[in-house]
Length: 333
Image (cartoon, rainbow, N blue to C red):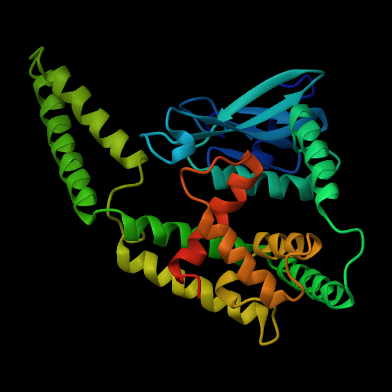
């Protein structure tokens, strides 16, 4: 192990165990989950700290919204963090580039340490309040038809739970396809041009610095800044980040989901996601629909009504941004 992670928790691992555990850990963005420890990042370096799993008391997601964040505008609409509480109240906050990396880490951590809470104390309080509010919204007794539809949706959710990776892939592919369709292709080539100029400036800066030219350091810094900024911004055209590759991934994700769902499924394969089914169940319990087909149509109307001018709770926002791209790409068909 070239760089040994620094111990944060009171409980530590011996060098051999630590090296083997870090090597085999499952990585999610800049962090990782091993069998013995949770590996955390600093602002610049991935997995440079570790907390023994036995010391973790709580782990949850925190999202910081910049100005214009709730409208989807601004350079940094949202900044996701992973927060780990350990050893009686100590906290470590880790910044992520992609929010779905945090979600996948928490989902995997639930399998490794199911007893550890995955919400903050404030989040648990809000969740309890939300559950109480929802209980008042729901009918005390459903019609036999609505109850039958509810049972059908629950069975569909259980089927999707057999292979959650396909649902996650469908949601990611839909978001990527939607972003690709809305973005100007010229931006990617402008970014690539700037990176090439940055590489040239970096090479010239190194050469000037070796020639003892004091101005070379400015070219060197500009080149490094351009390369690191645009490489991390996920805007450069690559083998995976282009319109054809994104469209192909979306079609393959739909095909994989249709294969899992099979013929008798309450929603089309391109909408087969647990959040879609859960929201349909809520619609049935509220008495706004009696069958799965009616619930899906009501859900479509709800999603159409939600736009950047509508303010919703964070939980609602997370659900909508996850599933609405699927409906937009299919034109709600």
